[in-house]
Length: 426
Ligand SMILES: [Zn+2]
Image (tube, rainbow, N blue to C red; front, side):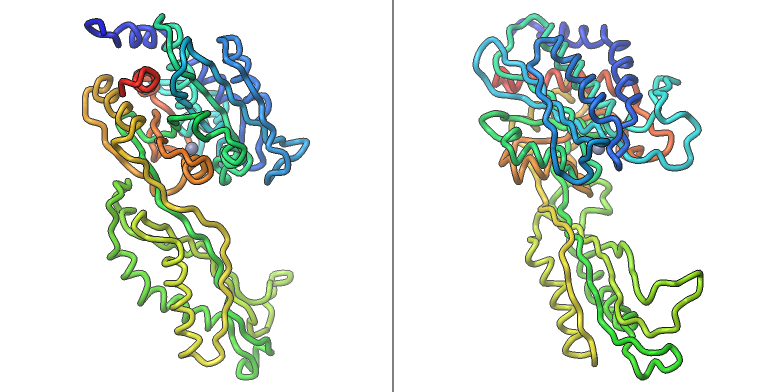
């Protein structure tokens, strides 16, 4: 290589700063709110038109029949692919185009994409249209940098990440879009901060516990059996037996924030007793109480063990508590996942961070899940990370923004990492 092969590439990205801002603004102005899944098609087509003008082969994949898909709100994904001058690996940048509801507390129009003090404000600016825009500029600059690139570059804009990814990456992964040899390395530009490489996430088990009782008149509770009191016994067991165990269980995963470096359990909701009618409570002994739990698991745990830990606690109550009976229902589960931090995509991204930002990359894991789960489990592609601009804590907040400086720097990192991966010099 010549004395500094990267300076030319970085200068090209610096020269496109305004174009990067324009692109991020244009993306934010599509109100792709999920649910219900607004404006997916025009947003996908905007991305497709841009990339097809740059020589990409563009495909639109309609995830027909997936949750929320309808004539009014079709689940439209876009995948753009460009083959290089010679055979080589495929580097894929995957961004979700959906954003969460705006919610209360905004002081600026959430879809105006206002630029102020070096930041772009708007719903999705941080999570994750800033990252999507940076990846497009990175790839375009790389193509224009003159070197005849080997291998293949892909960019996708996918839907429904905020609701589990079933109409997006899940659907595509099941149909081979995220499997080798079609794709070899994936970068997901989620907002993890410009100097962090996210190699994975904890797992999830959502479940519902129902306790059963017997209905009777509220004036004579001794004739019935109160399901809410049975549930109280369950919560008491969780408090005394399970929570201390979970806090004591530490992981080797570098999860941020560090409070999430052990197993956690949230009680999402509790529902018990008869519904009130016209604001008047029913004078009845509740015959059912339901509790929804959200258990987050570590890479060191396994799903069966996590489930049987809760079931065992309930079985104990069956033995010890008169009249106690229950049902335990799975709602949703995701295995924890963690890519190799010495794998090609993590290593090349960390090297690019060192070169562009001037400090060592921090390897992190996410407390919650994102689309990497589908790429790993369904696509069977392990060399996948999340890396992108934006401050994680701002995601889903009012007055969400992305720093323009961070977008520019992350575009340089993505371009450098992609180039190293394509040339096999990572
Ligand atoms: Zn996101």
